[in-house]
Image 1 (cartoon, rainbow, N blue to C red):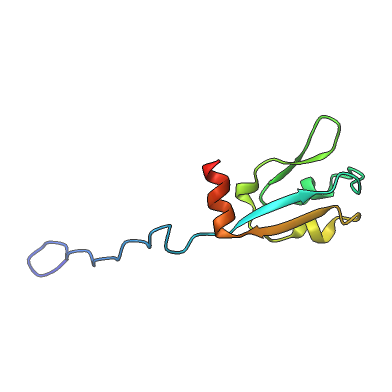
Image 2 (image 1 turned 120 degrees about the vertical axis):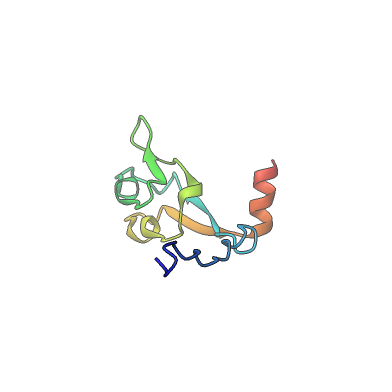
Length: 98
C-alpha cells in the first residue's frame, strides 16, 4: 500500500501473442501395419497418450493433435513400424478444411 492507503495500480502486461503468429507444429503419426507386431510399447509409453491399442491390441492414433513430435514411439519401436513427421503448415490447413 502507498501513503494514501490504497494499492498501487497493477503494471500493464502485454497480451499474449496471437496463436496465428507462432503456431505450434503439427505432426502426423504413421503406423506400418505390416511391420508392427503389436507389442504395445508405443501406446504404453507415449508421454501425451497420442497412441492407444484397439480391441485386437494393434496400435492406433488416438489423438494426433496432442503429439509434440518427441518421436519417443518412433525411437523405441523394436520393429521400426512408426514414423512421426511434421506436417507442413499448408498441409495442416488443408486437412482442417476437409
